[in-house]
Length: 124
Picture (cartoon, rainbow, N blue to C red):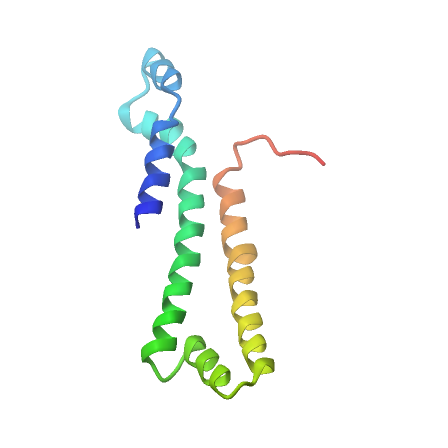
């Protein structure tokens, strides 16, 4: 949680106050300033914090399963490791990695693209 909070704090500190002043000069309402100026500047920091928290949560869940449960990826890793079957350990690790990559490229990347569609895209 501290790393996520620090990332969000840095995002709030990075808000361009000149845009807020410009919004006030053009008589934007508070909700318009928040929705159109503040939130778009904080979204990249929020997405980075989300990615970090997701990876950390998966690691913690796996360790908890490894230590105290009788099902799940962590349990399977511990079980096969205990039997010295490294093929199964690597297979479960690969499955774990594939699931995280699917979450990244099927859910997070399209969401990020949609939330930051206002930004100019980089051409290769």
